[in-house]
Amino acid sequence: MLRRRLTALLALAVALGTAATTAPARAVPAGLVPAQAAPAGVAPAQAVPAHGQDPRLRTRTVRYGPYTIPASDPNAPGGHHGGTGNTLKLGVEAPCGHCYIKGIKPDLVYPDGSNANVDTGPMLHHFVMYNQFRRDPVCGTDPTNPSFWLGERFAASGNERTFIDAPSGYGYYNAPLHRWNLIAELMTHAHEEQEVYIEVEYTYLPAHQAERAGWEKVRPVWLSVAGCATLDEVPVPSGRSATSWEWDVDVPGTVVGMGGHLHNGGVSLVAEKTGTGETLCDSVARYGETPEYVNLHGGKELSSMGRCIDPEGVGTVGKGDTVRLTAHYDTRQPIADAMGIMVTYIAGA
Ligand SMILES: [Cu+2]
Image (cartoon, rainbow, N blue to C red; front, side):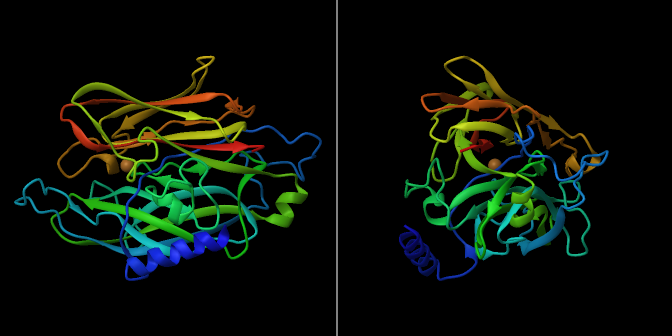
């Protein structure tokens, strides 16, 4: 299996002329999570201080890039944004190996480290992280989906930059030497070329410590209203609309965190169990909450998506259940490449 994937990856790299370059496409991300319940019978190794940060947690910030975003050209037909298109980098740096990653906090910054956002031009349209040697549970057997080639989709973000933060006692396990693949698309409203980095702050615990403290692994499950479509893109009409897709659960367990990703024009993204009608998560989009989310033309852009976090778990999903994901949009113009993605972290899988 591993060998087959490796071969596939090599073939892909060759097809791309190797290395980090513009390539396939993919989708996006969202935010994420938390919820939690203390693992039964495991005493927390130590009291968690007042604001909930475990002092053993390690933090590491990794920069990906640089990315050069071409200038926006007001005269180009439909070209009022400069954009990189989808770019692929293979084998990018992970913050740690044989570790449990609890927090993934994405940002877009200029080379001097200052915030790059739509108030000065740049927009983190999306990035998606793939773990090469793990199979994506939803689309990993579908060769039309990039995850077949690039691995398990475990984290992503749009410009809203949702902080993916697992409840304490849970983490995403990364094996030793597992490198990741990164697809990113960046855009700008500015009329000059801009250089930026995707900067991600990770918090994690080495596996020996996490296991001693009884941490559980979470399995990321990528739910998208586009199903396994190559780019996770769906068209939405003008006005109000609802676009759905259903997942027949094959990763049973306790949902410990969910967070949504929509594009501008999105209203909310809802995940519910069809059998019982139980809502697992209603992730609402908010706009222009802070000045950096007001673009150069004065428009308010999507600035946050709700996360669903519950110390007791957001809900449980079992074999035989179906989860319906619905993206609600309300937009003046139709959108050809809208998205509705909810990364779902499941424990006990
Ligand atoms: Cu997107």
